[in-house]
Length: 114
Image (cartoon, rainbow, N blue to C red; front, side, top):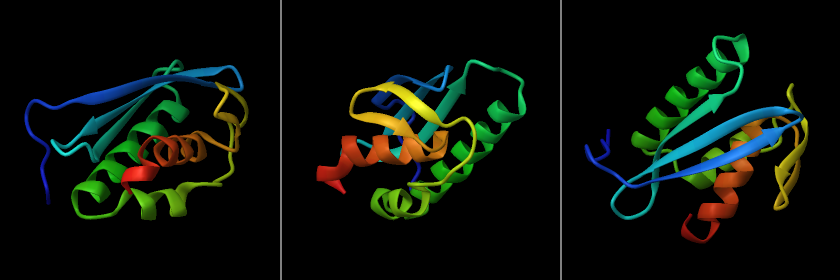
């Protein structure tokens, strides 16, 4: 497992999918690669929030154990479940789920570095 440094750079991105507001934070290794993700959804304590936390833990551990961002994008892009619909991001006008949105955002932000 490649552990991230104790102090690290990160990117935080605010998004909305079908009136569900959230924040995606991506923790970065020293070379700029993503090593962890966190999603904070406005419906704290909900099943949706809990599933987002579980997804983030599994996704982060997968990255730290060698899953490439490119492979993650291929596996998660296009997953379809609620909430889905229009987003607040003009580069990703519509998403079929939060997982789809995260995959597409990672693809856009790190596509040149995959």
